[in-house]
Amino acid sequence: MQTSPTPEELRDLLLNAPESATTRVMAILLSLVLLGVVLTLVRRRTLREEYTPIWVTVSLVITIISIRMDWLRALTRAIGAWTPSSTLFFLGEVFLVCICLNYAVRLSRTNTRLKELAQETAVLRARLSWLEGQAAQDRQKK
Amino acid sequence: MPAFNEAARLPAVLDSVRQVVPDAQIVVINDGSKDATTDVARDHGATVLELPFNLGYGAALQTGYKYALETDAQVVVQMDADGQHDPSEIPVLRAPIESAEADLVIGSRFLQPTDYEMGHARSAGRRLFQWMAGRAGLSVTDPTSGFQAMNRTVLELYAGPFFPTDYPDVDVLLVAHRRGIRIREVSVHMKPETRKSTLHGGTRSFYYLYRLALSLWAGTNQRTS
Image 1 (tube, each protein chain N blue to C red):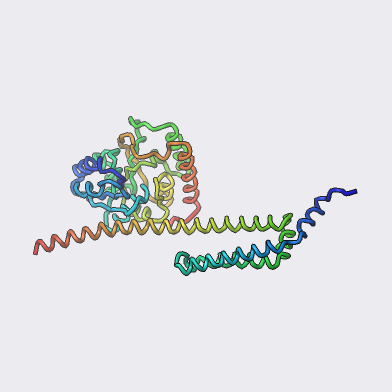
Image 2 (cartoon, rainbow over the protein chains, first blue to last red):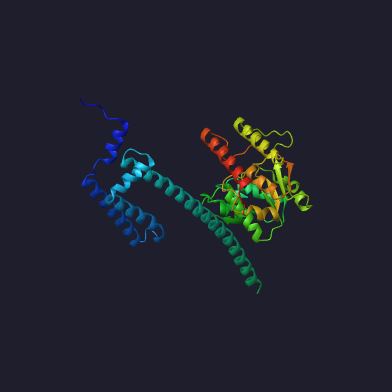
């Protein structure tokens, strides 16, 4: 008679399920596309070089995971998750939150610089027109 | 005098300021107006600081402070361009600065009973922050007043990065208070304000309270320069 598996058996089953070759190929393709997009953006000067290391790293990590899926399974076991895909989702979310925060910080800094630049422009323009007025007066006196 | 689309009301305000303080340099900060604010202000004898785009009330004020610092101004009086403040009270604000009794003078609507009215939410918010300021040893009745006078010590502080881009409030005054700025209030009369209040509307008033609380906390716990 067939009995339903215990939670532990079910978890082992999910953790040890063999990955399909399609998943692997898809993941490698995805990382290559990401790398290609990043390099194209750099070539077109749309993305500055200093912003690329993080995306090149992401592309590499995807490639490594798709080749060594046993590492992902070991990590899944270590963090107490049930399936490798949930580990991937978890890591992905942590990464996205971190990168969004990082961009919010960069955006704040850029906004501050922009504000200071605008203020400086306004002050300098006023000073310039005052000096021009003075110069015109001096010329008239001569 | 920060101005945003004030071409219609500026002439009367500038003319009455000129009558009260004929020798003063009047500076209008055009905060990215879409109307003829700059031309109108120049025609009425004001120096115009023209911001390339709208930065917000606080950032516009700060532009004025920076200009005052560069041009060696000793006493600065700030007021709104919408005619809310009565220029005839400028000497009252200036006097304590000139006699070196205070560094910062705030024209308060609430120091004495006036005919000025404000909404319930706004007045509740005002009382809450007044209480918070009181706990820090600062007693101000009208921290959001845009009618103020200050000396160079205050200008140097306010030109710093902590100064908000939107409406400065009790948070800014608390930073000034902690830096040893001598703050004094004098009673002034004001017409009901026309600028969009930050304490109106549900979400906006929550955001306002949140932002101010955060700013107060940051002012207590962080470097200000």
